[in-house]
Length: 186
Image (cartoon, rainbow, N blue to C red; front, side, top):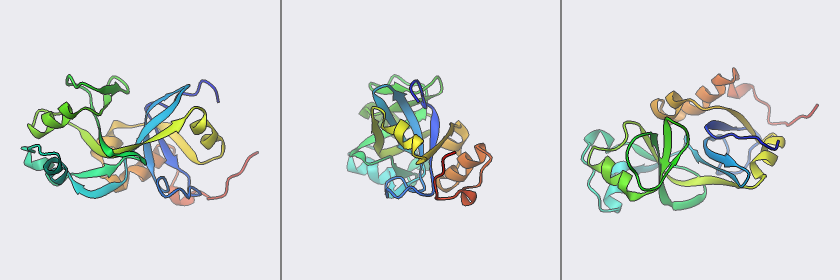
C-alpha cells in the first residue's frame, strides 16, 4: 500500500475493532504521508461544553449559540490539548491545511477568535487526536480494522455526532449493521 494517501478521508472502524478508543468510531484523517498519519475522531462528544472549556482556559465565549456545543474526544494522543477542525479562513498561528476547505488548528488564537464571535463558521473542537506511526495505518487497513471513504464536509460539520458514522457508511453504500466482525481474505 505504499503511496497510499488517506488525507481528507474518513476511517470507519470495522465491527471487530476492540480498541475502546476506536470501537464504533469515525475518524477524519487530517494528514497521511510516509511518516505516518494523524486524524480526529469526529463522532465522540464528551460531557464538556464549549462554555465550560472556555471557562477553564479563562476566555470569554460571547456567541451564546456556541455555549452548549459539546467538545469531542479526538483521540488518545495529547488528550489535554485542544484541536479545532474548521472550515478555512483566518490567520491562525498553527494550522495544518488539510485541503482548500478544511484546516486543523492547535493555536490559542483560534479559540480567542471563536470566543469573540470572529472564528470560523463551522468548527469541531476536540481534546486529543489519533496518530499512527510509519506504516501502522496501512497495516491496520490490511488487517481489515478500517474502511475508508473520501470525507464529506456536510458529515463533518452539519450532522449531529450520532449521525456521522452511519452517514459515512452510506457514502460506501453499506449499512453498518450488515458488516460482519469476521475478517476475510480472498
